[in-house]
Length: 353
Image 1: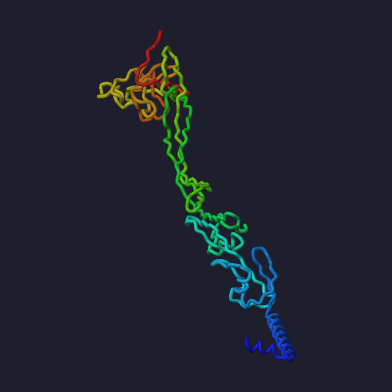
Image 2: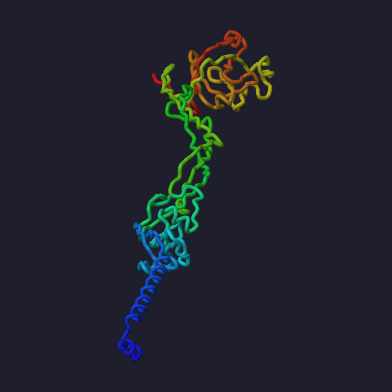
């Protein structure tokens, strides 16, 4: 300080003052030139804004600090923060946003993202749609802070199921049977079908079951039942409810003689019937027991009431052999066709006056 004081106290100090001022001016100019030379023009893209800046910052990090832009752990800075500033450099800063993500049956989690769309966020976490997953909101939906993204895994499976097919019962009227009676002609049997379903699962849980096709593997068999339609009838003074009615029956005749039975009067078993009773004209007939049981009464239209007591080698189906005491009556009777026979049953009907 004393040196400067003495300097300014001296006479003829003007040259010195001018020299000092010139030195200061040169230093200021040099400093300005240096600073002007180090200034760079940059563009900063941040929060939907574009700032055009002149800066002497050396790195991107220094520039952001100058602008008061705090960078979080998950924020995106491009180019990287340590990149040197060059003239006309463009700098992009995207602040990360918290997003809640729920994928399938996984627990919810919060991620910080700088992606701009739902699709981008899912790509960030490594999600790949392997099928027909449902994604909400839409993949192209812009991302907002605290938004929730939910992915539902959709899978499909074919399921086969065997199901029973119920059989139908067919009822057929039978005019050879008494009204109110029934006879099972064919037993029914259930069938089977295989139904193929398309099952839809959301996150492993079934939400829909859609039948695709049905294949009958075993058709059901119908149950056939004949039911009687014959009402009680009155004929020849008898009123009865026939078990069945036989149409177009052929009538023949036989006797106990040798020509018909191979036996003579006095032979053991002469005139004895298959049912164990002695044959009697006007009562005994020989029948096919598969059609008319032995011991049952029948009414032969035009001839009257008879009892099925005997059988014969030629008596099969709708053939009835009528018993007579002698061969002359047999010859006279001959053969009768187209007769109606009412099968009554084991009990003899009572004739009404």
